[in-house]
Image (spheres, rainbow, N blue to C red):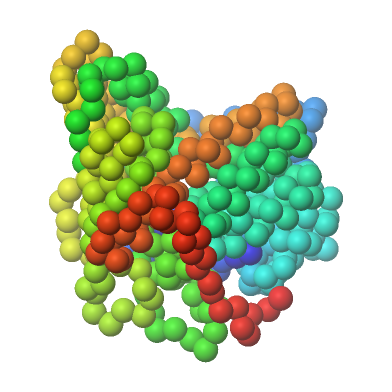
Length: 425
């Protein structure tokens, strides 16, 4: 569809997280996800010329959906990897699709635009699809890819509501049955220091778990007045301010730390209670600015999560989680130091200062390896489903200022809708 529209803010850093379809990343957006992440995980400076790509006998013919930062970023990593042939591209905006195709040397006949551009990419003969545009469209695009027998590389959030999330879970299972790969691009659990902490906690390093405290803090997303159609929201990361397009900040941004906790806990929340509010002046989209949620798990474990999207010089960490046990405490983070403090699994480590780049590069390499070596377990899908359902549960409980169980959320099966009237097919 359009670009890599996930959670980003847009500073002039390669960590810019999901700029949308217009290839003009708003390098000025002070509230961009990447801008927030860059403060804790700045990209490593180049120390030596890049080595030539490895020569692979087997090239994976892939199509890229989304011509913003994420599409260019992941595409560059695939080109650097050397095992991919970027065969076709698509973006909602024709000029962005053209620019993306030019960047990767894609034939003009395989540069597509409009809402249905992804279908033309699939028809062009690709064997894999990189889904890197607006989250609202992900389940539809991924479904078409799996139905076409393609491997899927997908950014997060993979969906904006519970029905869409469940579709992604089913697609992961279908892909496994078809001997196809379905990889969700997360970075935090792949970081060596975070991975070490997660492993030690899972080995009982904290004793019984008592409670968890996590944060997802970012600046305010762009939220200009709406136009006559939704088209104006499909660029420059504006979609982040519309819950139906991006899932709200707890899902589009906080999902990174929530995913880390899913890797640590191995299960989703069973209930949530909370509150949220919109307090920025002249809001046009419906994303919230502040949200507090207390999740409960099936064993009684309590997990308090705080999120905000405000330009207020907040001084607490962007994305961190402290896990408190009966005998020790652990910390995971999208940046900074992490640890297991106390107990028999004591550890202190430093998160990679290029966690965003490093994680995506590992995922690109894993996707290729999984395809070529026949690894179709697709383990990232279940964790993504657990994390997304947990985040959506928190978002909905907070919006209602009430307690909501996971069973109730799934029974409601509430689907978010976007009015696509007037958009180019």
